[in-house]
Length: 264
Image (cartoon, rainbow, N blue to C red; front, side, top):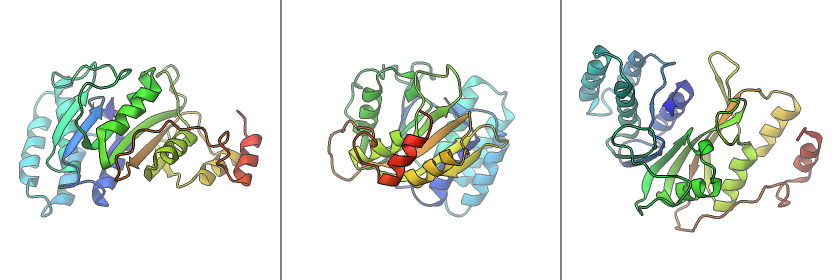
């Protein structure tokens, strides 16, 4: 799992809009410890520090740390260090925890097919390319729900099409909409990423109608992914297993008609 350009841009948008940042995201749990993918030169991190100059008193210290990482030989560990530096820019000062069978020494090696053996909850829980590799999908998303504090954020990056044999599963927007409806999540943002473009394009999907229109107009890619930021409601309601909107009679007539037109 790694932070590529789309993740970097999404996270910066959350920081710049005040969705996350100092005091709002003090505890982070990752399903999959992130490193720096490499399609963005790490020197570009300087531009984000420049934008926070005068806003975050830690900028000089962070700039010094970035310069150290840029001057040192590039290693697998330094790629994880770059990702954590970027997280400090995005989330502010925070405690960090990761569950990953193949991360660094700090990652806790728990099997996401079964319930996680700790009760702590976090302001932000990420699933940036991990959940599709786990067979027990209900448990993955139930654990994400349970480890996110009421009012906290879940940040997902989900394969949609292509990426052959990448993992067990691909996900469609109905998954995000129906999961959110069942659990009363606020969809802070839902983006459609087209990997056939250079650079990749990110298209907002504010509602089901937008995606259906894209499908009917044949604007969908054969290599794509979804990025979703979901906010858990303020109450402590347990995880609810969703049912697909079409079969649960949740869709308005025009979307039901469109569903019947599209290839399945």
